[in-house]
Image (tube, rainbow, N blue to C red):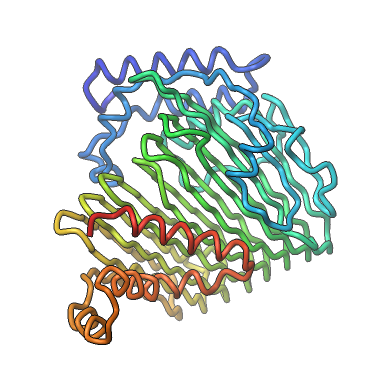
Length: 428
């Protein structure tokens, strides 16, 4: 296998192989196929364009183990979860927790497929080695249906709690697999929330897919607020039918190394998708956000806005691709990546891309990188505003284009609170 130094490759592969063999019950054909694909791909190296900015060396030096989960108390849960009016499903170290979840889920239908995977899962849009890893190691597949014509009265709140391992070099390893099936004309709101039970190391693999039938609607928000020693690798796929609508927002504030992928296919005319993200890496954190969007049918619209605020010696990476198929006439696609550097050693790498094979389309992309406007800082200080407060105001205004779009007030307040916490910890 090509990739990082062979000793690290072999050790990591053997540890993941041990976890694969320990999965509950017999291996499903689905899990086995993904495990074989992972082995075929081999480890990426910095010579691969999609991995050149990601420091995988430290990850491969760890020892990946299955956590010895302890029950999460109600008090711990209340401290970590949002006090939000929603239907709640809770997952602890990769397993569904019936004790902390709601029994009544309104119009939603929840199916827990332990180890075995239903046949109807969609094909991966843009797979990589970590997508295959999550598909092969996830102990459970959680299927969520919203029947045709149903409008969910409350959001569906997917709460994920991971426990870290305090032993040096050992990393608790958990994987989550969710699939949303939104039937014709149905309207859903889903919140993904990831937190750490403690400040020790863990690896979170997460995968959420959604199939949107004709005229279906989905409002999706992801919050990744895990601890600094943790790793977070996630893949979200959206497969959309005629006249369907999706808004997917991601707020990635935490984990020492985060790589989040959102892929979408507009497979029917009249589809509309918005994919947005905000990242605020501090210290030595690395946050990599990637999107891949296929306009496969005409008369569809897509909007993307991705922002990063990078402090200290942290790094933000953005890579986005809009692919317009030959028959996708009247496509309207826009992608923007705006970045703010706060630290002298902070780094941003950005690569927005277009591939257009159709005529009569309207597509654009752009990226900006800048620092705080010193004249704005000076003006605010002359009005008696402390320098630290002035910085916070400017940064909050930069992020407001995303945060003000959050309809749910409780959700918006939690995001704003985490922005404040991040900025207070940054050495800028």
